[in-house]
Image (cartoon, rainbow, N blue to C red):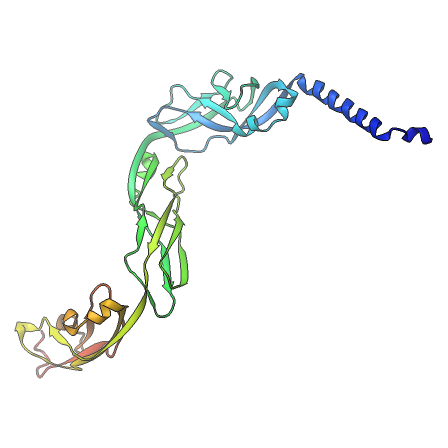
Length: 310
Protein backbone atom coordinates (compact mmCIF):
# COMPACT_ATOMS: atom_id res chain seq x y z
CA UNK A 1 0.00 0.00 0.00
CA UNK A 2 2.72 2.53 0.80
CA UNK A 3 4.29 1.90 -2.66
CA UNK A 4 1.11 3.25 -4.24
CA UNK A 5 1.94 6.75 -2.99
CA UNK A 6 5.62 6.67 -3.95
CA UNK A 7 6.45 9.39 -6.52
CA UNK A 8 2.80 10.50 -6.36
CA UNK A 9 3.33 13.86 -8.12
CA UNK A 10 5.23 12.18 -10.94
CA UNK A 11 2.37 9.75 -11.47
CA UNK A 12 -0.23 12.57 -11.45
CA UNK A 13 1.81 14.53 -13.96
CA UNK A 14 2.05 11.49 -16.21
CA UNK A 15 -1.72 11.00 -16.10
CA UNK A 16 -2.37 14.65 -16.91
CA UNK A 17 0.11 14.53 -19.78
CA UNK A 18 -1.63 11.45 -21.16
CA UNK A 19 -5.01 13.18 -20.97
CA UNK A 20 -3.66 16.27 -22.74
CA UNK A 21 -2.13 14.12 -25.46
CA UNK A 22 -5.39 12.26 -25.97
CA UNK A 23 -7.32 15.52 -26.10
CA UNK A 24 -4.91 16.98 -28.66
CA UNK A 25 -5.17 13.93 -30.91
CA UNK A 26 -8.97 13.77 -30.53
CA UNK A 27 -9.54 17.44 -31.37
CA UNK A 28 -7.30 17.32 -34.41
CA UNK A 29 -9.73 14.95 -36.08
CA UNK A 30 -12.46 16.30 -38.40
CA UNK A 31 -16.05 16.13 -37.19
CA UNK A 32 -19.46 17.05 -38.49
CA UNK A 33 -21.93 19.01 -36.37
CA UNK A 34 -25.52 20.13 -36.84
CA UNK A 35 -26.01 23.61 -35.36
CA UNK A 36 -28.36 26.61 -35.50
CA UNK A 37 -26.47 29.79 -36.38
CA UNK A 38 -27.74 33.40 -36.45
CA UNK A 39 -28.60 34.85 -39.85
CA UNK A 40 -26.34 37.87 -39.40
CA UNK A 41 -26.26 39.41 -42.89
CA UNK A 42 -28.60 39.39 -45.87
CA UNK A 43 -27.15 40.96 -49.01
CA UNK A 44 -29.76 42.51 -51.31
CA UNK A 45 -29.75 45.26 -53.93
CA UNK A 46 -28.27 48.54 -52.65
CA UNK A 47 -31.50 50.40 -53.52
CA UNK A 48 -33.55 48.16 -51.22
CA UNK A 49 -33.96 47.55 -47.51
CA UNK A 50 -35.62 44.64 -45.70
CA UNK A 51 -38.88 45.90 -44.16
CA UNK A 52 -39.92 42.86 -42.08
CA UNK A 53 -37.76 40.64 -39.84
CA UNK A 54 -36.43 37.46 -41.46
CA UNK A 55 -35.77 34.24 -39.45
CA UNK A 56 -33.35 34.74 -36.57
CA UNK A 57 -31.33 31.60 -37.36
CA UNK A 58 -30.82 28.77 -39.81
CA UNK A 59 -29.91 25.20 -38.90
CA UNK A 60 -26.97 23.88 -40.90
CA UNK A 61 -24.49 20.99 -41.03
CA UNK A 62 -20.83 22.00 -40.74
CA UNK A 63 -17.50 20.21 -40.73
CA UNK A 64 -14.24 21.18 -39.03
CA UNK A 65 -11.60 19.97 -36.62
CA UNK A 66 -12.67 19.33 -33.07
CA UNK A 67 -10.65 22.31 -31.85
CA UNK A 68 -12.34 24.64 -34.33
CA UNK A 69 -15.82 23.39 -33.50
CA UNK A 70 -15.17 24.09 -29.83
CA UNK A 71 -14.37 27.74 -30.54
CA UNK A 72 -17.20 30.28 -30.34
CA UNK A 73 -15.97 33.07 -32.65
CA UNK A 74 -17.25 31.55 -35.89
CA UNK A 75 -20.58 30.69 -34.26
CA UNK A 76 -21.19 34.24 -33.04
CA UNK A 77 -20.43 35.74 -36.44
CA UNK A 78 -23.22 33.63 -37.94
CA UNK A 79 -24.31 33.28 -41.56
CA UNK A 80 -24.44 35.47 -44.67
CA UNK A 81 -27.21 35.06 -47.25
CA UNK A 82 -26.83 36.53 -50.74
CA UNK A 83 -30.19 37.16 -52.43
CA UNK A 84 -30.05 37.49 -56.21
CA UNK A 85 -32.93 39.09 -58.04
CA UNK A 86 -34.16 41.01 -54.98
CA UNK A 87 -36.95 43.50 -55.63
CA UNK A 88 -39.34 45.85 -53.86
CA UNK A 89 -41.97 43.25 -52.99
CA UNK A 90 -42.67 40.22 -50.81
CA UNK A 91 -41.02 37.18 -52.37
CA UNK A 92 -39.65 33.73 -51.58
CA UNK A 93 -35.92 33.05 -51.73
CA UNK A 94 -34.46 29.55 -51.60
CA UNK A 95 -31.51 28.79 -49.34
CA UNK A 96 -28.65 26.42 -50.17
CA UNK A 97 -24.90 26.24 -49.82
CA UNK A 98 -24.61 28.20 -53.06
CA UNK A 99 -26.04 31.43 -51.56
CA UNK A 100 -25.44 30.81 -47.83
CA UNK A 101 -22.02 31.01 -46.23
CA UNK A 102 -20.35 31.46 -42.86
CA UNK A 103 -19.28 35.02 -42.06
CA UNK A 104 -16.13 33.62 -40.44
CA UNK A 105 -15.65 30.26 -42.10
CA UNK A 106 -11.97 30.03 -42.99
CA UNK A 107 -11.56 26.74 -41.05
CA UNK A 108 -15.17 25.53 -41.13
CA UNK A 109 -16.95 23.95 -44.09
CA UNK A 110 -20.68 24.47 -44.64
CA UNK A 111 -21.98 21.09 -45.85
CA UNK A 112 -25.74 21.37 -45.91
CA UNK A 113 -28.71 23.62 -45.09
CA UNK A 114 -31.06 21.71 -42.77
CA UNK A 115 -33.91 24.17 -42.25
CA UNK A 116 -35.48 26.37 -43.40
CA UNK A 117 -34.76 25.73 -47.06
CA UNK A 118 -36.65 28.86 -48.11
CA UNK A 119 -37.71 32.11 -46.47
CA UNK A 120 -40.08 34.97 -47.30
CA UNK A 121 -38.48 38.41 -47.58
CA UNK A 122 -40.27 41.76 -47.72
CA UNK A 123 -38.20 44.51 -49.34
CA UNK A 124 -38.95 48.19 -49.92
CA UNK A 125 -37.16 51.02 -51.64
CA UNK A 126 -34.50 52.55 -49.42
CA UNK A 127 -34.93 56.19 -48.35
CA UNK A 128 -32.60 58.53 -46.49
CA UNK A 129 -34.06 61.52 -44.68
CA UNK A 130 -32.72 64.14 -42.24
CA UNK A 131 -35.13 65.47 -39.60
CA UNK A 132 -34.79 67.80 -36.57
CA UNK A 133 -34.38 66.51 -33.02
CA UNK A 134 -36.90 67.56 -30.36
CA UNK A 135 -35.60 67.55 -26.78
CA UNK A 136 -37.73 66.07 -24.01
CA UNK A 137 -35.23 66.95 -21.28
CA UNK A 138 -36.73 68.95 -18.41
CA UNK A 139 -34.41 70.82 -16.04
CA UNK A 140 -35.46 72.25 -12.68
CA UNK A 141 -32.76 74.51 -11.20
CA UNK A 142 -32.16 74.81 -7.49
CA UNK A 143 -33.86 77.70 -5.70
CA UNK A 144 -32.20 80.98 -6.58
CA UNK A 145 -30.94 79.76 -9.96
CA UNK A 146 -32.19 80.07 -13.53
CA UNK A 147 -31.73 77.84 -16.58
CA UNK A 148 -31.51 79.60 -19.92
CA UNK A 149 -34.57 78.82 -22.03
CA UNK A 150 -32.37 78.38 -25.10
CA UNK A 151 -31.16 74.83 -24.69
CA UNK A 152 -28.34 73.88 -27.04
CA UNK A 153 -28.46 70.41 -28.61
CA UNK A 154 -25.70 68.86 -30.67
CA UNK A 155 -26.28 67.64 -33.25
CA UNK A 156 -29.61 69.26 -34.03
CA UNK A 157 -30.61 66.75 -36.73
CA UNK A 158 -30.67 62.99 -37.19
CA UNK A 159 -30.38 61.01 -40.42
CA UNK A 160 -32.81 58.14 -40.96
CA UNK A 161 -32.24 55.36 -43.50
CA UNK A 162 -34.90 52.72 -43.99
CA UNK A 163 -38.06 51.64 -45.84
CA UNK A 164 -39.48 54.57 -47.81
CA UNK A 165 -43.10 53.81 -46.94
CA UNK A 166 -42.37 53.85 -43.20
CA UNK A 167 -40.05 56.84 -42.78
CA UNK A 168 -41.33 59.32 -45.39
CA UNK A 169 -43.93 60.74 -42.95
CA UNK A 170 -41.54 61.16 -40.00
CA UNK A 171 -41.04 64.91 -39.41
CA UNK A 172 -38.90 64.81 -36.24
CA UNK A 173 -37.32 62.50 -33.69
CA UNK A 174 -37.70 63.05 -29.95
CA UNK A 175 -35.20 62.35 -27.23
CA UNK A 176 -36.27 60.11 -24.38
CA UNK A 177 -38.03 61.94 -21.56
CA UNK A 178 -35.64 62.87 -18.76
CA UNK A 179 -35.89 65.15 -15.73
CA UNK A 180 -32.95 66.72 -13.90
CA UNK A 181 -33.50 68.61 -10.64
CA UNK A 182 -31.50 70.79 -8.27
CA UNK A 183 -29.11 72.20 -10.87
CA UNK A 184 -26.74 75.03 -9.86
CA UNK A 185 -23.95 74.92 -12.43
CA UNK A 186 -23.62 74.79 -16.21
CA UNK A 187 -23.81 71.20 -17.37
CA UNK A 188 -24.25 68.89 -20.34
CA UNK A 189 -26.20 65.67 -20.56
CA UNK A 190 -26.10 62.89 -23.17
CA UNK A 191 -29.60 61.80 -24.11
CA UNK A 192 -30.71 58.80 -26.17
CA UNK A 193 -33.13 59.31 -29.04
CA UNK A 194 -36.46 57.50 -29.23
CA UNK A 195 -36.12 54.90 -31.95
CA UNK A 196 -39.19 54.42 -34.16
CA UNK A 197 -40.44 50.83 -34.24
CA UNK A 198 -39.33 50.24 -37.81
CA UNK A 199 -37.41 47.11 -38.80
CA UNK A 200 -34.31 47.83 -40.83
CA UNK A 201 -34.10 51.47 -39.70
CA UNK A 202 -30.65 53.01 -39.35
CA UNK A 203 -30.59 56.16 -37.18
CA UNK A 204 -27.44 58.27 -37.02
CA UNK A 205 -26.69 59.44 -34.43
CA UNK A 206 -28.72 57.61 -31.77
CA UNK A 207 -27.77 60.01 -28.96
CA UNK A 208 -27.33 63.78 -28.61
CA UNK A 209 -25.69 66.09 -26.09
CA UNK A 210 -27.72 68.90 -24.51
CA UNK A 211 -25.88 71.89 -23.04
CA UNK A 212 -27.41 74.16 -20.39
CA UNK A 213 -26.34 77.48 -18.94
CA UNK A 214 -27.27 77.95 -15.27
CA UNK A 215 -26.96 81.33 -13.58
CA UNK A 216 -27.90 82.81 -10.20
CA UNK A 217 -31.28 84.55 -10.23
CA UNK A 218 -31.86 88.14 -9.20
CA UNK A 219 -35.37 89.35 -8.38
CA UNK A 220 -36.82 92.82 -8.78
CA UNK A 221 -40.19 94.40 -7.94
CA UNK A 222 -42.02 97.09 -9.89
CA UNK A 223 -44.96 98.82 -8.19
CA UNK A 224 -47.87 100.84 -9.55
CA UNK A 225 -47.16 100.08 -13.21
CA UNK A 226 -49.84 101.59 -15.43
CA UNK A 227 -52.09 99.20 -17.34
CA UNK A 228 -52.91 100.20 -20.92
CA UNK A 229 -56.33 99.33 -22.37
CA UNK A 230 -56.03 98.59 -26.12
CA UNK A 231 -58.37 97.98 -29.08
CA UNK A 232 -61.21 100.16 -27.78
CA UNK A 233 -63.94 101.02 -30.34
CA UNK A 234 -63.13 104.14 -32.28
CA UNK A 235 -60.06 104.71 -30.11
CA UNK A 236 -62.25 106.08 -27.33
CA UNK A 237 -61.12 106.14 -23.72
CA UNK A 238 -62.89 103.80 -21.33
CA UNK A 239 -62.64 103.71 -17.60
CA UNK A 240 -61.44 100.47 -16.00
CA UNK A 241 -60.15 99.20 -12.67
CA UNK A 242 -57.62 98.58 -11.39
CA UNK A 243 -55.46 100.92 -13.42
CA UNK A 244 -52.08 99.82 -12.02
CA UNK A 245 -50.34 96.56 -11.21
CA UNK A 246 -47.41 95.36 -9.07
CA UNK A 247 -44.94 92.95 -10.65
CA UNK A 248 -42.12 90.72 -9.44
CA UNK A 249 -39.66 89.40 -12.03
CA UNK A 250 -36.45 87.36 -12.09
CA UNK A 251 -33.52 86.82 -14.40
CA UNK A 252 -29.77 87.10 -14.74
CA UNK A 253 -28.20 89.76 -12.55
CA UNK A 254 -27.00 91.88 -15.48
CA UNK A 255 -30.38 91.69 -17.22
CA UNK A 256 -32.40 92.57 -14.12
CA UNK A 257 -30.09 95.45 -13.21
CA UNK A 258 -30.67 97.01 -16.63
CA UNK A 259 -34.42 96.32 -16.69
CA UNK A 260 -36.70 99.36 -16.60
CA UNK A 261 -40.42 99.94 -17.02
CA UNK A 262 -39.86 101.13 -20.56
CA UNK A 263 -38.59 97.68 -21.59
CA UNK A 264 -41.87 95.86 -20.93
CA UNK A 265 -45.57 96.54 -21.22
CA UNK A 266 -48.75 95.67 -19.34
CA UNK A 267 -51.90 95.63 -21.46
CA UNK A 268 -55.57 94.71 -21.26
CA UNK A 269 -57.32 93.94 -24.55
CA UNK A 270 -60.85 95.34 -24.91
CA UNK A 271 -61.64 92.67 -27.55
CA UNK A 272 -61.03 89.87 -25.03
CA UNK A 273 -63.49 91.21 -22.46
CA UNK A 274 -66.30 88.86 -21.41
CA UNK A 275 -69.99 89.71 -20.99
CA UNK A 276 -69.22 91.27 -17.59
CA UNK A 277 -66.57 93.53 -19.07
CA UNK A 278 -63.69 91.61 -17.49
CA UNK A 279 -60.56 91.19 -19.61
CA UNK A 280 -57.22 89.53 -18.74
CA UNK A 281 -54.04 91.45 -18.00
CA UNK A 282 -51.10 90.55 -20.23
CA UNK A 283 -47.50 91.26 -19.22
CA UNK A 284 -44.99 91.39 -22.07
CA UNK A 285 -41.40 90.99 -20.81
CA UNK A 286 -38.04 90.61 -22.53
CA UNK A 287 -37.42 86.92 -23.43
CA UNK A 288 -34.70 86.47 -20.78
CA UNK A 289 -36.91 87.70 -17.91
CA UNK A 290 -39.33 85.48 -15.95
CA UNK A 291 -42.54 86.76 -14.37
CA UNK A 292 -42.82 85.54 -10.77
CA UNK A 293 -45.87 87.49 -9.55
CA UNK A 294 -48.50 90.01 -10.65
CA UNK A 295 -50.93 91.66 -8.26
CA UNK A 296 -53.95 91.27 -10.54
CA UNK A 297 -54.92 88.92 -13.36
CA UNK A 298 -57.69 91.02 -14.93
CA UNK A 299 -59.37 94.41 -15.08
CA UNK A 300 -63.04 95.36 -15.33
CA UNK A 301 -64.09 97.84 -18.00
CA UNK A 302 -66.54 100.46 -16.72
CA UNK A 303 -68.96 101.83 -19.34
CA UNK A 304 -71.80 104.35 -19.09
CA UNK A 305 -73.61 102.68 -21.98
CA UNK A 306 -73.81 98.93 -21.68
CA UNK A 307 -74.39 98.57 -25.44
CA UNK A 308 -71.46 100.77 -26.52
CA UNK A 309 -69.28 97.72 -27.23
CA UNK A 310 -71.80 96.15 -29.59
